[in-house]
Amino acid sequence: MQRVARPGAAGYWQVGGNIFDNVTWSARDGDHNPAGPDPRSNTTVGIPYAYGLDAAGCVPDVVSRTAGAGKGLRVSDGSCSPQTPDPSPAPTTPTPTPTTLARR
Image 1 (tube, one colour):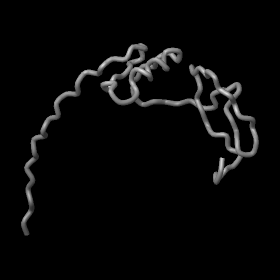
Image 2 (image 1 turned 90 degrees about the horizontal axis):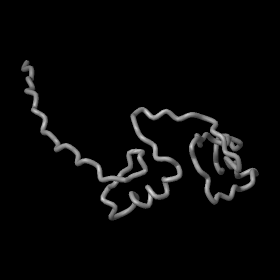
Image 3 (image 1 turned 90 degrees about the vertical axis):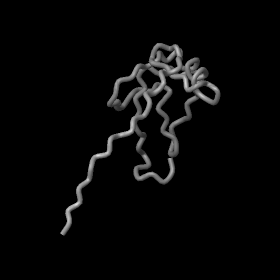
Image 4 (image 1 turned 180 degrees about the vertical axis):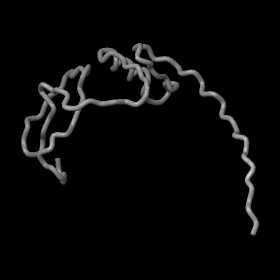
């Protein structure tokens, strides 16, 4: 870490459910403060909307089938099975509200 207010600060991470595959952890020193080789969560994350998580083991397949050009905007709903989302509803034109100006 360079140019940080607290050079010894490690940061925060939530690693629950992750699979670390083929990871080489750097050694801890003055510029590196890795989360591994035995990463443990040191915070929690709260997402303010409903979502479904894919199992960590199927994420590489989901990413290869949904990310990048020519994938048709496919998404996964947490079932490990990418699908094309329903089209968005047609936009509506709001009815203008009359405005009254006061005259002096």
